[in-house]
Image (cartoon, rainbow over all chains, first blue to last red; front, side, top):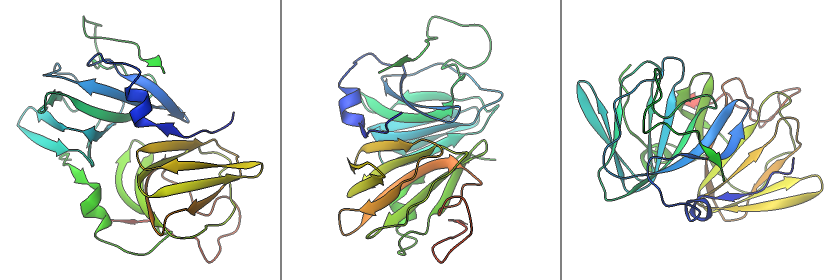
Length: 122
Length: 122
């Protein structure tokens, strides 16, 4: 395997759909994913995986059951395993980079639903 | 634990020394670290850990034994486990964010040396 630089801007240019994370790299058993966010996602939790969100562009509002946190571009937030959360794009579009266990499902634990996707590699 | 946003700019403002990674978060057994780079580091490898480098500011040149790759701000490179590499700041200062196993030593496997540091939490 030959390590090559990966430009986030070039990878974001490859897709336009919101809430559909794409895999752009792997660190041991973890994925590096990017996603475009528009509007609100759904409440969910990951019982076994902390989830790292780095905001590339725009502002991410992370809702928790008792409050929310606004995360601007250049900042990150780590949602601990088992913590219910609901991401929301506060800007018309928010671009994020994620690092999480490769088996992490975007809609969290439990039954798959209409918003569940298996991330493609791009 | 209450998840809070972490601003890279605010964290970088807390230290000025080069080649001394600081811990700014944890994802399961992985650290999120940031570092300032100036000039060249040393050749090293991590037998058991892939290493994720995201360039926040400046340009990172990653030397491999057979070539090098230049990684500008907004891009990342993942160095696979066991791969000898030597990071270099191509700009007067390069700022990076790292994700790697928490036990990863900055100077790689083998004896500690003058450039080995245990990352502080900031």
